[in-house]
Image (cartoon, rainbow, N blue to C red; front, side):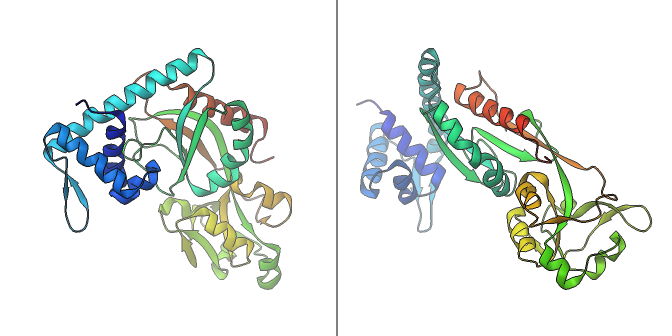
Amino acid sequence: MKTTLDELHAFVAVVDSGSITAAADLLGLTISATSRTLGRLEEKLQTTLLRRTTRRLELTEEGAAFLQHARAILASVDEAEEQMAARRMRPAGRLRIDAATPFMLHVLVPLLEGFRARYPDVVLELNSNEGIIDLLEKRTDVAFRIGALKDSTLHARPMGTSRVRVLASPAYLKRHGKPASPDQLGRHALLGFTQPETLNDWPLRDAEGNALHIRPTITSSSGETLRHMALAGLGIVCLSDFMTREDRRHGDLLQLFPKQTLDVRQPINAVYYRNTALAARITCFVDHVAQALGQQPFDA
């Protein structure tokens, strides 16, 4: 009996998700069906691929070796299907996208309706991670990253830049007063990032003329959380234009020190691995985002 694609999919899904239960949910199967499929594969190969402990599943040495072949086979099938779709000029297949929550909510989600109308055969899978992820480990096709890139193994396409500004809600300023200069910020509640620490460098100069590094009163790993706290009047914040454009437009957040603010901009890149020809579904999505961002700058 020959190994089937369903069995390969089940094996890879169990490895990637970490459990048969999670894999079953991912594949849309029952737990028992997924377990039987995995067992059938091991019977065909006459070897144990996964060692079952009381707490988790672990790859055996044979399983790790077979996993590489399984991924290569599934990738080849995906590529063949994409080539057929490209012949019909209709990009197709699953597109896995990763971005930090603020960029996902404020930039990508509003663009999805237009993309789906143009490319109905592309199945979108959206994932949000506040930190840097391994694209291969997370099976991600394209990620959107804000800030300087460090991973030289990735290919990047610039999407533009987004300026950062110091902001506060009218309610906060009414209760606590508006600071007249950056050196008065120490008297106020400041909202900052847990990490990286560089995000707590604000685009201002201190009394000595050095770049202003703030010590937050409240911290969060998520820019979206900081935005909501600022809107709730909990303190002063420094955020990127891409997530505050509508807040500033409606007067829900007001910029502080406009004349003293340095023109600091965060680069935005779409990143992906490019070992072979870039899949049409990735190209069309990145093109769609780039076109939209070019037509509507964040600081508009």
